Amino acid sequence: MGGLTSLIETGYEVLTEAGYSPQLAYFEVEHEMKLICDLIYEGGFNKMYADCSNTSEYGSYVVGPKVIGKESKQAMKDALKRIQDGSFAKEFMDDYRNGFKDLYKMRERSANSLLSRVGADLRDHMSFVGEADKYSTPTEEEAK
Image 1 (spheres, helix red, strand yellow):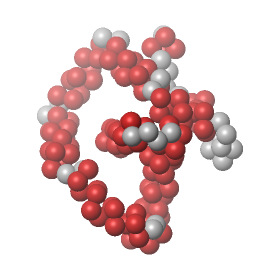
Image 2 (cartoon, one colour):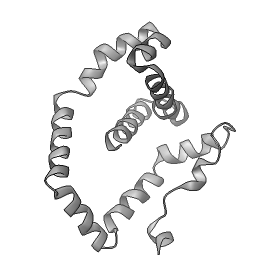
Image 3 (cartoon, rainbow, N blue to C red):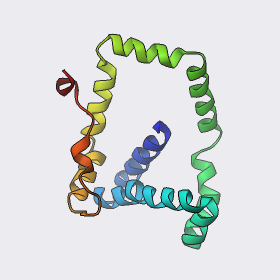
């Protein structure tokens, strides 16, 4: 989950820093992700590639490995090691004992990011999305 959300956030930053509107950047990195994932879920990579443009397919083959490469693989290995050796659980439990101070800060930062605000505004205009924004995770004050 963290890798996916970081990929979306970074893609959004790259597009908006390059001058694309926040709304267009949202659609390209967050909204399109669901469409891609749905295609993969329905029929694997082959269905996704069959249902996308040749340009998108080509880009997937040549750009994807440059974005997610050796450094990302090593980071995944490091994260797995931390899960397996218990250091992630210890860090999480330390934050729990500290009243989830770090979790609440990260949650607040995410909820107040431009990407989250633009997405919430756009989803308000999408009747097919439902009421997803009404079920956000609680802030530190709300959790008390």
